[in-house]
Length: 162
Figure 1 (cartoon, helix red, strand yellow):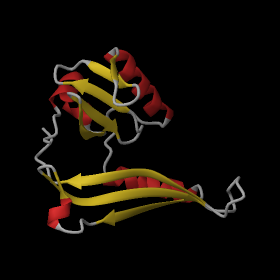
Figure 2 (cartoon, one colour):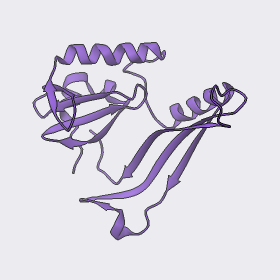
Figure 3 (cartoon, one colour):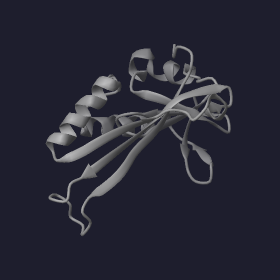
């Protein structure tokens, strides 16, 4: 599946799409996840906005209200829609978490073989699993550490975004 950035670019402008990842398409709805806020904007090809409900059911919603929720979440993190989510940002996040006593790990998992690496017509280049671990000195549970999987990303061979 080829990423369809047009609906998002038409709504936000190319500069404000820098923090988004194209996650796929379900029932004709393009799913764009913001890398910092970890929230989705779901748009059909004409730009109509939807919110995921359950069991792959989407409901039409107002784009402006969804964008306001996303902007508020970003503001709470000290960021904006113009903030670029890239390797540099991820490294800054890792250092800030480490300073706060949270160990942030990234593991790159290469495909087993070219045959098993194909996802439709896209070739999976690698998979990144990000985890955060809170050391036992700061943990508020009886466990020695807390490990949370923050995200799993598949790095696909794909054309230019815009």
